[in-house]
Length: 398
Image 1 (cartoon, helix red, strand yellow):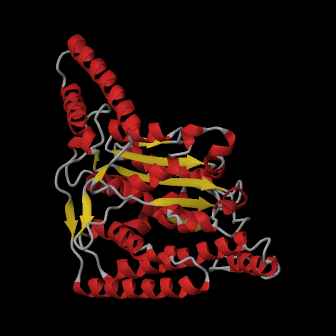
Image 2 (cartoon, rainbow, N blue to C red):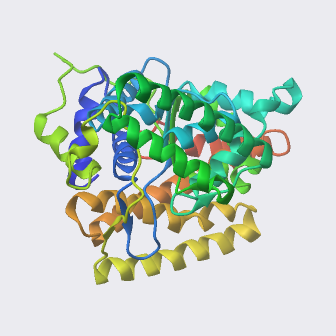
């Protein structure tokens, strides 16, 4: 990717023993989206920088190094308290969004989790049934309010009151310390406004998994109902990436670390003062302007995705995927633009190429999975096209 995203991707990729450039690039963009999330938006669509990203690569091919480096970036920016490694229930997601304004999910072997979620009703795991619905709803409310059910609202209210009692007890024992006063104020605000919904929740998610565990989840239903349509898939086709010679795990360069910290806090380092600090920012967000040339390109992209949607309405029924294309281009181009302070043609062009390729990839996966029984030849063709796609795709021999 261009600019800071490329520099961050290069460092993340350096932390894995095997060549994993696509995973590193997509992970850098996701991490930047989380780091910038509470402080920035664009000037056209009020777009926010939260993304759903699924990273798919062969077992033992370097996913752990990418995941660890991404988590390290968030730790340097003081966001670890809002980072979670799995999803236990719908109620837990809502509680996480009241503990902190942000909930960033970084999950290893995410394929197993979503297989469990998709079979929740049959297995009797009712606590998982509402997870996907809440994830989709929260994803689109980063600049609004997230409404929750009455039962869930009471569950959150009870949790907040319990936490308020703990904070007040700590203040009695240790005095009115700034971090305790700030947490007390945040809890009281949440209790007062909960009936109107959770205010500007920022939910982002990334997961790492293998092709075998993930591909079956990309179905016609998941694509058309919106969950897979909202996500970006990063699929590493090469199952035997090259091992780097004389590889060493290098720390994050100080210049890169300081730049990310400064952008995360909107130019202030106050937010890094206390490990007990709540990850939040309810003030005005910094608006990233768009050049006239980039704005014209975005207008053209709307038309291109509309045309693609119309064609697939007749051809495959997968028009829901390109209908979300512009929103994702807007988000990714905004993330690329934040470090430079203005969105340019370069940012928009790169984002469009990424999202167009992603949509085409998801369409092939859906058609391969859904045609497996009714049209095996078509399913095989789509699987082969998926395998050879891109500069790092498999060879014709494989």
